[in-house]
Image 1 (cartoon, rainbow, N blue to C red):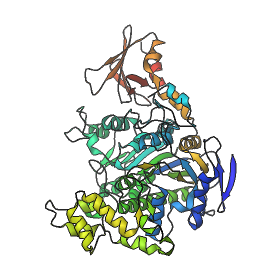
Image 2 (image 1 turned 180 degrees about the vertical axis):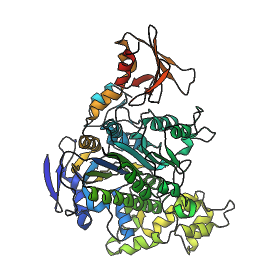
Image 3 (image 1 turned 90 degrees about the horizontal axis):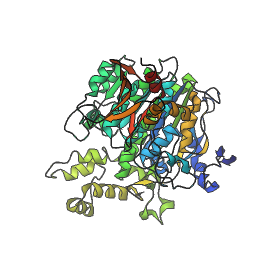
Image 4 (image 1 turned 60 degrees about the horizontal axis):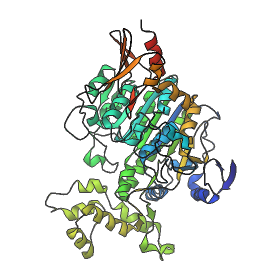
Length: 559
C-alpha cells in the first residue's frame, strides 16, 4: 500500500489493482474546499465493526455530473464532506461496465459479465481480474444484504427505477440476465426484505404489460399474507407504522425529481424514502443494512439531458444527507456512497469553448440551465400530438425566446429529443462524449466506523461492508448456494426438474419414500405435507439448481 498526499487529503493506493498510477489518482486533488472532512462530526472510531450499514449508489454518474450539480446548487453537496477516495469500475470483460456486473461487484465482491446479476462470470479477459472466477460460470454468489439478514439484521432496498432494475437486483437477486424481472421480483419477495421502496409494481402482478407477470402469480397477495403493509403513495408511506413495508409507487420507474410535482405529485422523494426506511429499520436491536439507489441520473445521461442529471444528482445528495444525519447522531453506522460507473462524459465546456474558456464565468454555464422547469422527459410529456405547443414545450426545457435558427431546428427536427438537448447544451456550453457508459474512475464517499478510503476496486466495497457487519461473503455463499444435484448425490438421492409449469420449475428430490420439492425463486421446501421456510431462495441458473446448505440437512432428517 502506498500513501500519497492529494490537496491535504491522504489517499491510500491499493497495489493489488492492476495499472494504478499516480496519474489515476490525481483527480482526487481537485476536491478543494468541497472535499474537506468534517472531523468534529466524525463517528466514534471503531476500525472493524458498525451496527448499521447504508449503501447508496447514484447510477451512471460521472464526476462531471456532480461538478455541474454543485455549481447549479451554488453550494457544496452533502457528498463533498465525505470524499475519501476513488473507485475502479471495470467488469470482468470490459473497461466500461454495465450496471448489472457493477452492482454484482459492489454487492458480492465478485467481478462479473454484462447483464449477469449476482452470479459468477463466464468470461474473464480484463487485466488484473482473477481468471478463476470463470471456473464456475453462472454460479450464484451471496450479496451483503443476504449476509446481513443471516446475521439477524433488518434489511431494505430503495430505488427510483423499478425495484427489479439491475442495480437493486444486484443486492437482492441472482439471474443470468438483468431483464428477467419476473424472477428478480419473486426472489425479492421471498427473500423477506423488511423494507422495499420504489417502482416496479407491474412485475408483482399478472397482466399484459411488458413487465407484468406471465406466471399468473400475484406477489402482492404473497406480501400481504406475509404481513407487509403495501403502500402506493407518499402519504401512506409517511403514515405507516408497520415494520414491514413494500412501497410500489409506480408501474415501472418513478418520475425525475424535477418533474415530480407536475407529473407524479403522489410519489415520495428519494430522501423521504430513505428517511422512512432508516426510521423503520433502526428499530431492530441487531442493526440494519439499507441499499439506496438514485437510478435516473443514468437515464438522463443516456439521453444527454443535463436537467435530468442535475435534478437527480441533487435528489440523491438529499438522500445522502438523510443517511449522514442519522449516522452522525447514531455514531455506529457506516455510510458508503458511490456511482457504479460513469455515463455520457458530461463536461462544463464543449467545442464552443475550446479557445474562450478562460474568460467564461460560471453563470454562462448555469443560467441557461436554470431556465428549464422540466427535464427532457417531462417537457416532451407535455407535447400535443399535433405539436401545436412545440415552442411552449421548448420553453419548459429552457429554450425560451428561440432565435430564428433555433425555431427552424425545432420545426424541422426529425428527432425532437436530440434537437432539444443539442440546443440547450449549446446555450449552456455543456459537452457530451457519448450516449453510453464511460470507463473512468468515480469518487468514493464514506463515513463512519471502518469506512473505506483510497483508490480501490469496486469489489472491495462489498468486502468492507461484510467485514463491518461481521461476516465473510465467501462463507455465506457456501452456505446459501450449494449445487443441488451434486449435494443430493452424496445423500444417495435422485434429482429431477419438474417443468410442467415452464414459468415455475420445481426441483424434486427423492430417496426411497422420501420426497422433497423446491420451487424455483422461493425460500420454500415442501415435504411431508408441509412447507418449511429456508434461509435463502432456491435459484436455477443455466439449468442448474442451487439450494441453501440447510435444505440438504433438512432432507436427510425426513423419516
